[in-house]
Length: 261
Image (cartoon, rainbow, N blue to C red; front, side, top):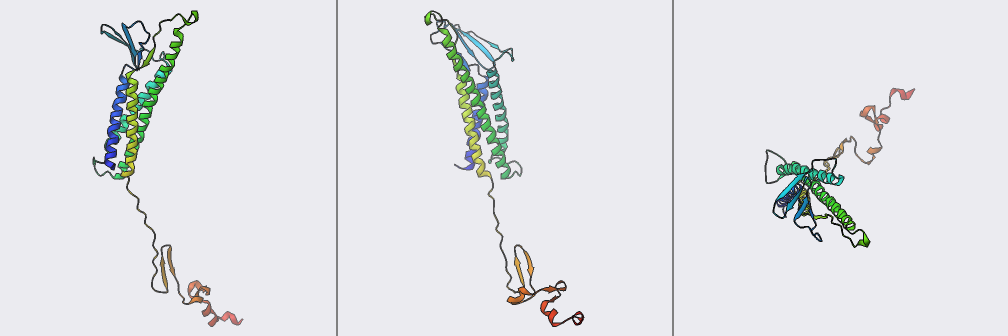
């Protein structure tokens, strides 16, 4: 799969996942009434993150929003926060990924900038998908706990022979929409991160090369410049006097006036 194809497919999957997260957050059927062993079937109740609804057998539906915030369970508020954070991150990453698409040219944007933007949007899509999956899973766990607690409280008195009527709730359609949407967003973010590797420009390494002159006096190396003023293997043992003006042999062959004192 080419880089452009991987990037576009990841963008489309993330777009569908974000739309699913928004739809799941606004749906009312996060939990639906369990009709098993329920003699009263003329009323059907279901609840969402923002309101609870009652549908009668005549087809009339009445919904009532939650007018309180502090009176709601802490888990429900946590699920709300996770879904909202996931939607906000997904929307921001969607805007970033639009400008990062390789098939869209905006000014003189380099491939390195597009690669960084693609990686950023991919990471944000992954976090957005995780927020949606975690939020839906927390709500599902809360439903399972309440379901079994309600089941245990239904049979009380006379050794469990008397059954009390209690409303139990089970999984609603919004949970499955949220799971699928979070998975699509997560997969799209991973594909965007994979496409980032193909957009990044390849680094070129230049190795240093040493150049040696053909003459004996000068030698050019990559480390610097070196000049030699003598010939032969014994030149390394010679000492330089007077700042390089005379060598040791010249000093011995031409004694100074101080040698006769």
